Image (cartoon, rainbow, N blue to C red):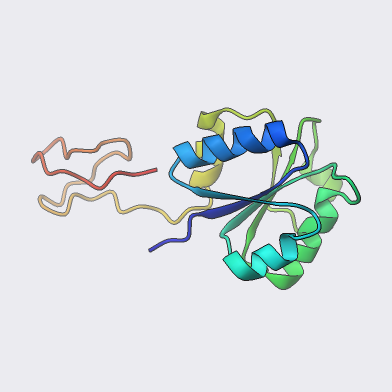
Length: 148
């Protein structure tokens, strides 16, 4: 079973609640941490992704991500901000992606698709290739697994 844990590190309760709701609706398991407990939480939960806000109370998200990547290099680390940030400004940082907030559910789904393992898009009964968004095979009518 694939890991769907995503830890959110954001000192804005409003933004955290919105991100948590969006991630939950997309079938993820959103968890909340802070800049002081994130390394302990990474060790305990071993999430596949962490979303860290850029401006935090005592640090910045890029510094937190550097610490996370030292401890858990395979964890996907997204830097979030309501300001326009560019990857070229963080070229020496191990950030995987920058996310502009507020974010729509469609944009979050697009980001997740880039990091979640690819799903098998072949019907198990008839063997035909089908689109991601079908719940029933259009060729033979077989019920397919529900997808994020």
